[in-house]
Every structure is written in C-alpha cells, then in structure tokens.
Image 1: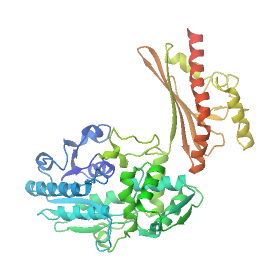
Image 2: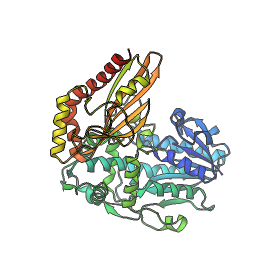
Image 3: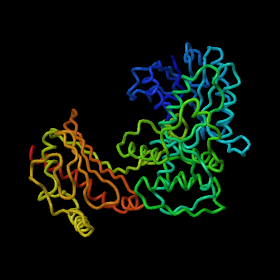
Image 4: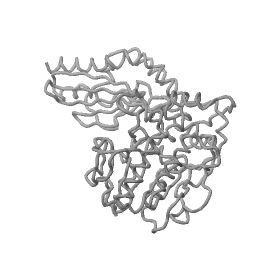
Length: 479
C-alpha cells in the first residue's frame, strides 16, 4: 500500500507517519515546508513532495492508494473557513483524477442540528466536500485529543496548573468524549485497511464521557495538584475566554477563539460503528493524561500543535518563551581563550569552600531559607574539593550529568515549588571556548510560576557573576 500523508509536519501527521511505516506502508509526505521534516527520525524512509493542498497535486497523488487529509486551517487568517472548503475541493478533484482508492479524513465530533460552532461546522463542511467525488472517504470525527503537545491538552494543562481558582463560562458543564492520541493513530491506520465499501462518518472517542470541569479535575489529580475551584458565571463571552486562554497558555488567541467557541457543543460518540469496524479504544481519560504527562516530563514530545504551518506559529509570530512546555529558562553565554578542558576543570570546583563567585550573601540566605523549610541548605558542601562525579552533592545541588569537558548538569535538591537545574555546555571554537550556562525551572502550579518571577531579579545578580567568575578563575590559572 502507498499512502500520501498531508500535514506530515503537523501534530497528528508527524505521529502518523512512523505508525504507517511500522505497518509496512510506503509513505509519501506532502508538506509546505520540507525543512521541518529534516529532524524526523523517519525522514530517510519516506518520499517528500514539496507543496500544499491548494496547489497542483499530480506528483503527490500519483500511484497513491490511500490519501490522508490532515489539513486544518483553523484561525489562519480572516477567511480560513472558506479556504478550508476550497482546499478540500481542490484535493477531492485531484484525488478523483489520480484514481486514489480512499481518502481518510480526521474531522471533529458534533451533531449538525446542534447549532455547531464555526470551527466544527467547517470541519463537517470539509468532510462533505471530500465525499462529493468518486473516491471512498472515511471521515473519522474526534473531540478533544489528549496527547503531549496537542492544542487541547496544552490548554488544559496550563489552565489547571497555573490557576488554582478559575472563573469559567457555563460550558464547563458541557459533555465531551476525549480520546488519546495513541487511539486516534490506531483508528487512522485501521481506516486505511478497512474493506472496500466502508465509507462515511465514523465517530471515535475514548472510554470516558466527562464534562470539561471533570476533565480539569482528573488532570489535577493525575498531575498531583490540589483540586481546582471552578466558579461558573454566565457573562464570560467566548471572546473574553479566548483572550484569557491566550494570556495563560501557549495557545494564541487567534487559535483559542474558535476552539473556545466549540466548547458549547456536546461532542460525544453517537454509535458503535468505530468499535464494530476497528475495535474499542485502549485508553481512558486518566490513562491518556498520564501518558501525556509522562512524555512531557521526559521532554519526549515528538510533535506539537505549533508545528503546523499556520500564521500564528510562523517565524514572524512572537511566541512567549515558555510556549509549548512548562519550563522557564535563564540563559547566559561567554567566550574565553582557555581550552574546554581547562575551563571545565575550574567549573567542577564550584560550591563548598570555593563558593558561587557572585552574590554569595544571596546564596547563603537561600541556603538558610532552605534549611528552615527542611531542605539540605549549603552546609553539606562537597565530597571532594576538586573531583566531581555523577551523584555527588554540591551544596543543595546534585550532579545529574557530567560529560567532561562538554556538559555539566546540577539538579536542585533545595525545597522549591518545581524542579530546577543549572547546566553548562562547553564547546571549542576557533577563538577558544564557547560556554552556555542555562538555569532551567519546571514550575509546579501557580506557586511555581510566582516563585520564578519573584526570584528573577536576583538572577540578574547571581547568574552573570557566576559565569564571569568561573571564566576569570580559569584564565588566571591557565593564562
């Protein structure tokens, strides 16, 4: 079987391609920006065709058995709804001409007689347009997709983690049937192998039907957070809600608005056709959240919603520094004429009697606070003044990674509302040595974010002086 995957650089497409390859399918990818695929582990196993669904498609669809239509223009300009239908029409005509056997389209759940939002109405219109031709079309309709990096999951994650108390519209009581990204991929692969004659709309969903309020409570429980307090009010408009989502989460307002508008529509599976044809979903909501959190904590998020070629995510769009992940950074850089080995030798003597070079009184105050809170403080010092190995303690840090002379990572064991790391990357260049020092903080809940911004002014004193001090000592010692 030869399959064309449109949107292969997007969230779902980027995860579907390796699943198809594992299934023995020959894959061709149609992408607007081929460079986005260069870092994919499967790039050498697929054929890449530059282009888009709005342009000529002869080369992309030649000798294709199954074409996956994973294009979504949500929020991409003022006429994105009309453009979605035009693109679907162009793709349908080209697939007819190329003799494609089947189109598999991922759309959105919802009943047409339920006063659907513009977003869901457009999803249904695209499916109807694709089905107007002679090619068999399987339209899989899903609601909220739960997976690390998905727009819905990132909205849920940030809202629940950042806000212990939320003033919410009444849509928090609306029922939905979220589905794990793993189950979505399973259904997409199964649809390609369905017998001839299988076509039409097939609703897919996870094992649980919940309200959005219940989904937030489940996320909080799985993330180890206190139960969130929701205060529903009737006056919070979708526009205000979308601006709030854009402020608190990495999902921009232009994308949040149509998503928020859709939350008033109940999106649940109405029949068992998917189960009959392809089998039941393997994951419930708790399991899906657990898997997404695990991938996020391991930094193993293979694709994200912001990978899509939509206007809010292009190079000219200013994303917040924390967009796409709950990690905050303070980055400092320096150069020196000493070698990486010489610099690294001095770097590995930090802490203990050597100290931290800059703002020593701030380090001592932080150590005293840590002791008062039950942490180790600064008293435990170091095992050895010069030698350092993985697992060693360095004041209230512990060595997590040591690859001399290029990488050192210290993990904080102080009492802190989150996880903190201090790391250095050391590289040789034509001028000597280039050093990148990075403080990383993964906050836990609203308290974690408040903590980061409360200590941010002190970072401007401590971290630049720390890097300058190590460079200065290395240059004094080694000339």
